[in-house]
Length: 358
Image 1 (cartoon, rainbow, N blue to C red):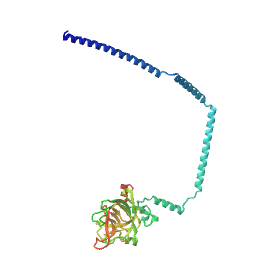
Image 2 (cartoon, rainbow, N blue to C red; image 1 turned 90 degrees about the vertical axis):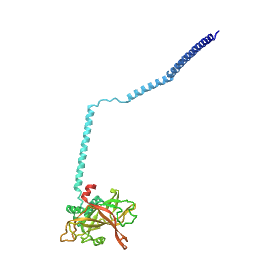
Image 3 (cartoon, helix red, strand yellow; image 1 turned 120 degrees about the vertical axis):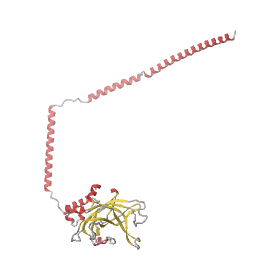
Image 4 (tube, one colour; image 1 turned 60 degrees about the vertical axis):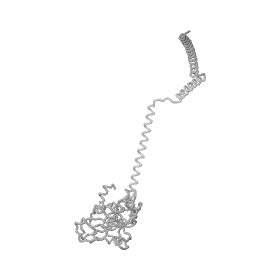
């Protein structure tokens, strides 16, 4: 046999063997598939078919539910329409209640009228004092009390109060280190400042000799007016109302006008002081004691032949100076000297009320 014939014979034998193996594999695969199908049908049928116990439980629940529903239907009474007789009885009973309520209301009104007629009017001094105390409590702690600012506090009228308001200003304080101040070098070195407001009224009350003695006399220029009383609010409003500073003598401040001998076309200088309790904020502070203020002003009317009458003034809208009196050597010898504490502006109180809202 040649080599080519032997090669063909081998290929024929291998093909026959492959066909035989393929048929055997297909037979076994088909047999396994049939067995798995039969087994799965048996499992699903046993899992979802109800047992006798389950059927018995379902029957018992249905019977119990039906019995309970029947019991509720028998327990709820049937609603029958109300008869005409019952409706009339209810209406009569309601009418009796209304009549009784009206009678009680009439008795209460009559009793109230009798009490009002028998109650005398309470015009005792104690009542007047309580009313006055209530009015004073309603007075804002940041506002000037005009009863104390008037020379006749018991007979203040609208005209007098209007005149006092025309001489009332709101001071916008700005305390902090200023250029050229003689305050301690460490005072206000951080640049921190204390800002606030204080309402003041320049009244026509003559200052006492004690108040006049507290005025600064080493800075007078020209003729000066007599010293009159400055009335202030009880407290200075600081940091937009989040803080405050007490005025220890709100009705014992003093003021005068310097430079009256100069021409009326030129401005004069208003000098006044108030006494405060002081406060601190870091390295800047307001010392406890008297704060001195100076500001240009203009005379609105002269005092005429009566030099003791207070001048009618209008304050400048420029910045004024706030100072304190402390012992130092800056003038060449040890004595009490003025040291700049800050600056301020004065605004008429009516305008300040419109702008600030208080």
